[in-house]
Length: 481
Image 1 (cartoon, rainbow, N blue to C red):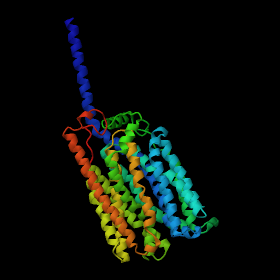
Image 2 (cartoon, rainbow, N blue to C red; image 1 turned 90 degrees about the vertical axis):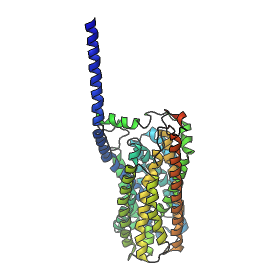
Image 3 (tube, one colour; image 1 turned 135 degrees about the vertical axis):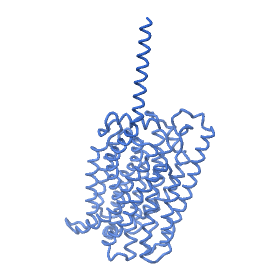
Image 4 (cartoon, rainbow, N blue to C red; image 1 turned 180 degrees about the horizontal axis):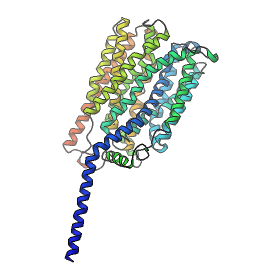
């Protein structure tokens, strides 16, 4: 009996030793597995999302390129009617964002995101056949419905693959597609307009037709490239999947039933309103910049003709793309959002401040570099901020979509600010954007102070009642500044 007891004791010690060795081995392998998981996920998912977002921005802003190449003249639209057509897009875009995000989990990202892309690609092609104001407004409105779910859906989708402090860089990488869209859009418009009147269609019509066809093709192919979740990611081994899931489960619960209380928590969240209003002001500038940069450059007579003006729009966007990635990397390294934006946004403020006063075409063109860089570089931080500070799928889905619904209302402002009567220098228009960006800076500063207060309250024990609840009210859930 004593022998049996000793043997059982020895076996227990051996099992405990093996378990301890396995745990130590896992801990030792964790950095290696993390690097492998992040690299594989980055390489397989981010290029696809960047392509989808590139198509999205090209297809929503190519009207700016088409306008100076004959769209408005051939369809006999007034400036007011053209602006209404732009607003029709933003109205339906905003209305579709929150419903789309709530549907995303039911439909699955692999189906929903490619479906939306193929749909708006088809509608972009339809823009190449519009005859007047009515058809222009109708197609732009439908385009907004299709495009509205993409960006909030992608932000939500990424939050199921990356930890909070890894999001800004990834959003920054695919958001560079927004700034690159200006560069590609200008080059494509220049090339496609050269097609001329082939097939009885004007050159500006071919911009919509060809770019729409490319979008449909990319959307269809993305169905085969995007995994629905970590578990369905074929590019990860079983060990890597387990490690990736473990990393995310340390931050949130793996399963969460739908709850209207979580939706309400998202709607009545102070952070989402402060950041959404700041983002609204930034997007007023960003959208007006994308829609009217070709017109501004053309009116400055900096270029000899509209085709050359398309080429001059490329350079500011290219510079902004590089700076956007750099700022996103810095934001993730420091685990800071608000303070980084408080440093990047002043670049755009300086740009608008100078361009609103200068009459020198070369100085004005130089300021477009600061304007583009300051605005585009701030966007990944503000997009990831709410997702960072919202725990739980449905609250995160609500805050992400609500932020974008409010922010994208900036499209209405952008559509009407740059009126023909303000040409060629648009001093009043630039001054309005300057005021909005200054307001954005103040709102970001207030939100940074609010997040700091929430962390201080948690540290002082005010949130102890929520300990172990697994959402962002938990005292162990530290808000990202």
